[in-house]
Amino acid sequence: RCKKPMRGVSGTSKTKGRRYHYYECAGKKPKKGADGKRPPKCSKRNERKFELESTVLYILEDILSSQENLASIAADAAA
Image (tube, rainbow, N blue to C red; front, side, top):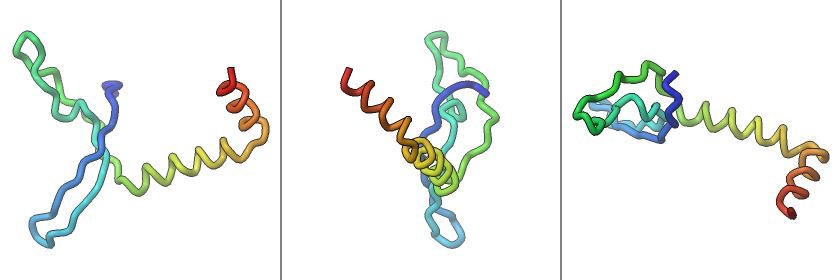
């Protein structure tokens, strides 16, 4: 949406004291610019840490399980 990176955040619930971990867009709490104004807040919803990291690991495993991809990565690293 706003194209800013996601950042890891954690919080503790007030009722049960449980700690929650999630990713939020860096545009959710924008800092003031040089003109002293804040840009509009990003409307992207937070992502649960476990779900996002599980998806990333699944995609990486898929990419790295291919011999062709591994050969290409090795060739790029050696260059």
